[in-house]
Length: 306
Image (cartoon, rainbow, N blue to C red; front, side):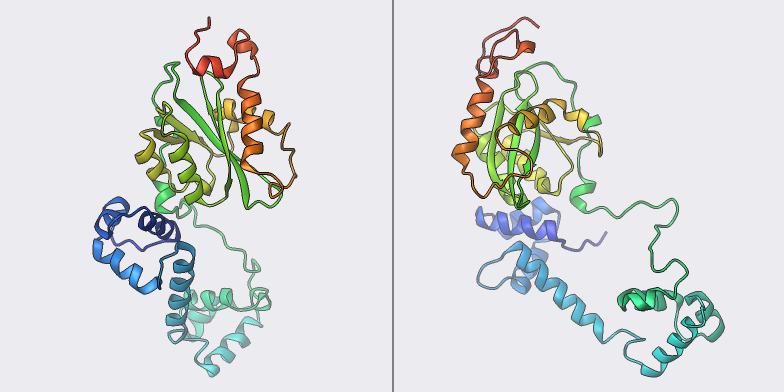
């Protein structure tokens, strides 16, 4: 099956290039042919390849290539005829079936590209409705997510983590949080909302910590979950949408962390050392469920009666 390179792919390519991956290695990791990756870098990168910039360049080129192929926009007489019948409340199907000016899908696409005034001539005023029985078109990274229902049975050992982010007022800055399910031990850090920054944070934080599984929320900031798996050795799973209770330990610790970083507060005014200070306090706070041992003690190997 032919696959197009998408924005998530381009972010991965940029990150892997910075990590020193070869084109062949990148192609193997992302599931493309190596010449596809080489062509992508040459076409959409200049002196240095950047994922977001490359995606904008690609979209601009694709849009420009379509302009000369648009039947209605490039035929003034045809456009006037279609406008005339739309104003008489003809549907695109009726225009197609009666006058054979253009296919009804061509007319629909023209209307959706046009101003909102054109959409008002449609019975549903331009509201799109997905075909019954179909599913939304997921990106390859979303489709490849491992469900929480495929997560190994919890064996009450250290190293099973739940992850999420706390959003600052700016939304471009996050505190990424991980909590160990057994001990309640917290690992956190100040990051941008970018998937590459989240990946690098996980790679750094779990370098010398036991990491068997990670269960994430469904945010797009975890798009590089396959790379996180590779570098941490963890099995990465995702909770069901709209069910935060499946990551109860993480939701609870995020609430405790909000004591230090209230909802709506600006993260631009804090530094990572402020986050680490709050983390140390929480990790050294006795917990009733741990028989009043601290998460730090349990994580470091102090036994407690369950």
